[in-house]
Amino acid sequence: MAAAQAVEEMRSRVVLGEFGVRNVHTTDFPGNYSGYDDAWDQERFEKNFRVDVVHMDENSLEFDMVGIDAAIANAFRRILLAEVPTMAVEKVLVYNNTSIVQDEILAHRLGLIPIHADPRLFEYRNQGDEEGTEIDTLQFRLQVRCTRNPHAAKDSSDPNELYMNHKVYTRHMTWIPLGNQADLFPEGTIRPVHDDILIAQLRPGQEIDLLMHCVKGIGKDHAKFSPVATASYRLLPDITLLEPVEGEAAEELSRCFSPGVIEVQEVQGKKVARVANPRLDTFSREIFRNEKLKKAVRLARVRDHYICKK
Image (cartoon, rainbow, N blue to C red; front, top):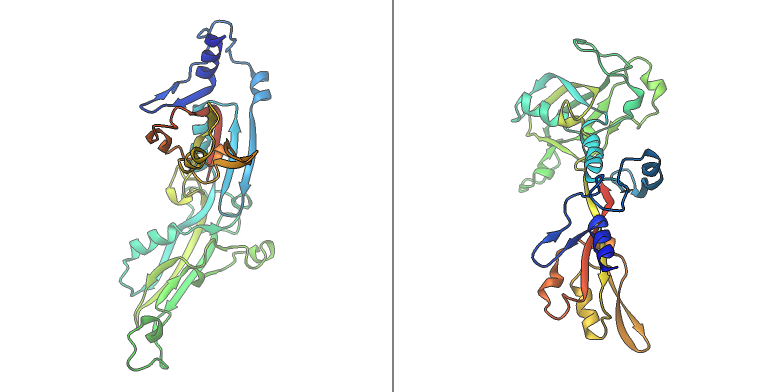
């Protein structure tokens, strides 16, 4: 019985010990375990594999992938980074730039600005096309000139008071519809994702006047097309109390983990520790510094349950 439990732990858990990590490598390949059929079976895979969306908003996504190997989870991560198309600035036509930022540096900064547009509604621009059309190009104009504020106090040294338009933000970018784009896209739908990204700083007499062409692309071609700032995954934590932890030891145990992982309850007048939400733990392994409690807890991760964030 003990041998069967050990084999099951080896197959399903990555165990974190005080001085090392056990069961790191994938071992469920055909013929490795007597009595287990680990041959590839599509029906079994479809039955066990699932994706659970935990949180989603405009800026972040967290989902669980269950029933897969690390290679598949990493493939999803790389797809998010390099294969999902977005719109980004590809060409910058500089009419006037008297700021201290060189033209090529300014063009590079503009290329990294995330654009709020659905890439599914656009086509990839053909190689060699110089002029874009309404089906493959978005056009933005940036025209800002810095002047002195005539109403500023004479003894002021604050640039925000002395100068007007001395900071160029993404909110100064104006979308210029091409063809019938004004009819297809309501006002406000085509814009930079954030309107407070600082592009450059100016002083009186300096000016930036340029035109931007945005095209559809993928992160494999250039990082500016990557739709995520970062994409990561980690295994689901599995924390098990091997013995009851009560009294002051329960409070001490809760302090060894991230907030919300260990909950201290009142049971018949005594404080008792229980595992509330292991998902919140970062596995700092602080528990192993406590000589009294380190043998009361087993730290592990579920081998085929991946928490993915972007």
